[in-house]
Amino acid sequence: MKKIIALLVMLFSLSAFADQVEVKGIGTIPYDGAVFSKDPSSDDKKKVIDAAKMSAWKNYLASLNDSKQKMLLIHEKEVSANFDKFITQFVIVDQKVDKELKSFTVIIRASFNSGALDQFLQSASLGAEKNNAAYNSENESAFSFLFTARKATSVKQFDTRVTKKEKASTSNSVKDSEDGATVSASSEKTTGGSQLKQEDKVAYAVTSSKDVDAAMGEILTASGINYASYDDIVGNCAAPSVDQFKKEYVDNDELSAQTRTKIINAARECGIKFFAIGTLDAGVNDTDPVSGNKRVFVSVTAQIWDISAKPLPRKIGSVGPVQFSGMGPDQTVASKNALNLAAKETGKQLVDQLNAKKVR
Image 1: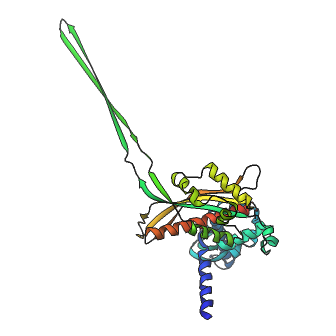
Image 2: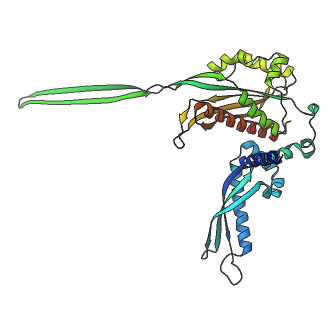
Image 3: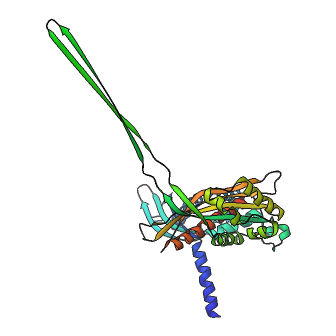
């Protein structure tokens, strides 16, 4: 039993550590000095540290996506009142006292609990009563998603085509006279050309989205969004299976209008109100120059649609195109890590956009 408890404590600690975001902050204040001293007083030290914390907080906010920044502006008073709850710790990196200018500067490195901020914003956007209510399917808008993962199987690169042109012209003139003959000559040479570069030709193959669905589902569930699996829409409402439109994603970057319409109509029939659809494209691996591990980049695009809108669905949110990278000892591990990170970060952005619109 003790081993189980210790394991749970370790897991929660790792989870909390994963939500930590470190940001630098700089605070500078004028000071009068302590009594019988030209050095800053204890009150001055507290003020300059508070200023550095606020600087770090502003830097942290600048790194957040637009939807989350919008929510923070709406709930600015509540956030300010709970400011210290989001800072888990800070360390003074450097400090400087300028006795001539009477200025006191402190540089800190602060850690923010992004998970706590997400929970706060979720609660603020939905209201405490709804956020703490027990699960009831009748009180929630049905949500589902379809994300397709593709991997690049080959990349064909073309050499630059160089075309050179050269034009030359000459002219001569001869004039006879009694005193003799005068001969003049001139020549002109013009060179130029052009270069033609072609984009890479990439061949794709559709891969299993099982890991992507699991990572996306983890973020949605943790954010209080209960969802229906696309497989259930296929089984209950005759939506096209991934195998039926796999070739469309191999040859193109998006579904055909006909396939997309079939998917949306089937989801509507199953009572789905909000539907997210997107692609995750994993590139060919390269080698990270620092660690020597294999590295894979994943490009993500996603949209959220209100498919209950009549007569046509309405897009209420989107992500990307944005890139993420993952590393590992081989391509398989690197690709899984990149896809997992991309799915989770995309899920977070979709949740932020839903929260900003107070959608549940």
